[in-house]
Length: 97
Image (cartoon, rainbow, N blue to C red; front, side, top):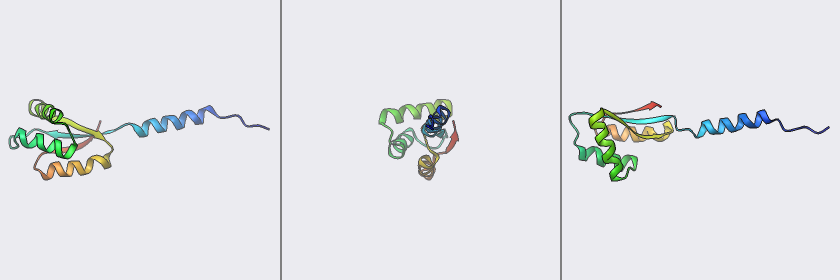
């Protein structure tokens, strides 16, 4: 007797792979009255590998809206970035999207 492939199992495996590829976490940086634009821009370039333009745009959003999601990814990828940003006296948190 020949067994037929089970399409339900294939679909479930595809969905699990799709969910695993979704970046569920976001590194959010908050505004303050202490840090300069230059310091925040430099930090985003060095820590998050932003381009200068991207870092400047995020910094403007942080300034005017109070916060900005600067990077999405896996928690394990974002945790060292958050640590380094906070070490530089900039407020940041990792949040679920």
